[in-house]
Length: 312
Image (cartoon, rainbow, N blue to C red; front, top):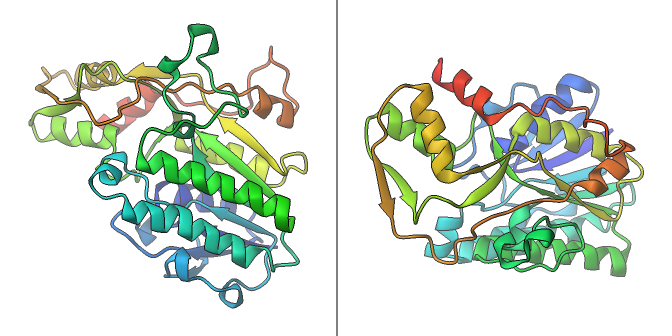
């Protein structure tokens, strides 16, 4: 069996490869990554075939025959998309389009898996409280160029299925945390600020609320869905139901390391969503897990991870 993993040297992609190879050593993996600032080959702990190339330029001949393609490759930093949206259009839309064009000619393809985001649903605070958990049939109301390009990619995949019969799975995941995350992201940035005794920049009032999932839990779910025959031609939310306001996370970190935080409240991000929440009933349905039973994943709590991080 051969699996193509794009963006495999990035944060979530490398965790996926490592966990997949640890569970299925006989699977052949072709990792494709153009090695941007957010990529690191050393994150991959197993021997895989590696192609350093932009997904916009990949050809069917370079991919060969494969059963699964999972697309982690994306520009993902919202602040960067506000400064310059063009790289997001290129990678997230044009890149996904090119992968679909390659995949639709692959007769061995069992599933095209797109890693999307909860941000495509927009700000849950725009809805009534009783509607504040987004299910997969929620309207797409992205607030940034980043989330808009991810929503566009989702729609391209759905249309490729309708027109060309490309089998797909789209997963929309909440905020990931874990090792090897780039320093530009929220938790690593706080870590660096505390470590170096500098001011922690906090947008607005810091009460923006996010749902957080340990990257290894997310990857475990992705691997289960990868081979699940029911998770085809569908969209599945992946969440943890563990939520925090940004300012709460700052307090948690500074309490762990027993320092007085130096917080600098800065003007809020343009178009900044106040909250994201995911309804994950479809995930339970696909995996056959009743509502009154716990999902079979560790769901490491963000507090436990932060304690481990600061004990290093």
